[in-house]
Image 1 (cartoon, protein in one colour):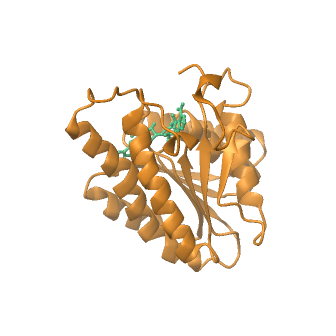
Image 2 (spheres, rainbow, N blue to C red):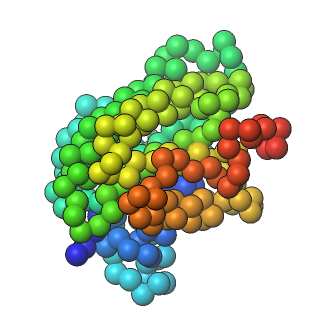
Length: 239
Ligand SMILES: NC(=O)c1ccc[n+]([C@@H]2O[C@H](COP(=O)([O-])OP(=O)(O)OC[C@H]3O[C@@H](n4cnc5c(N)ncnc54)[C@H](OP(=O)(O)O)[C@@H]3O)[C@@H](O)[C@H]2O)c1
């Protein structure tokens, strides 16, 4: 049966690499959501090319929307019409430095809306759909970082909201984790195409590994690079 993957927060980094790999390996319909229509169109082309190269025909639908707007809920209703949604990836964030006491309150609120309220609304929409899935592995993945637990002050805004998001995801796991694979992917350093461990394609492979896990072995979180967990030292990366 055809399966649909939804990427909330498509972009040239992790978002499009995950969409491309999942299109190559399994998914027939991919929904990409973000704000910039030109970038969405480029992302769509990237996914289509990756699938075509692997001899697969996939349908890629794009939805230009700001997830902090009222329009987001209406957009999710349109995404739902694609049917057979079995995997949802929540990936958007504003990845930018913001020194302590310099970032203004408005920006902090905006980050909270994107990362926390956006994740909350997405999960509230996705979980009932994923709980109905019987022909695939129902999966909800959120891109996070171990810095949500042990912050880097130069990025305090990003990691403050990621800490709340992590807590939210853990609550969702406690309620729905027996029926839906709900997981955090902790990306523990700066994503770069040149980095052997933190390039988007390598990270996408880790998403796939998580997706492939059988019920009973479902991990609640993974660290990228492998082994960069709670004892990870920020000095290992050049922030
Ligand atoms: N990049 C890193 O070094 C790094 C490190 C650790 C963790 N992470 C995490 O990994 C995830 C992906 O990061 P990435 O840099 O690789 O990004 P990406 O996957 O290339 O793209 C994410 C996309 O989310 C979209 N987005 C942001 N705010 C949005 C909003 N309000 N509504 C709709 N779409 C929105 C942006 O597109 P538009 O602007 O077009 O909307 C952006 O291109 C993030 O959660 C990030 O915190 C990244």
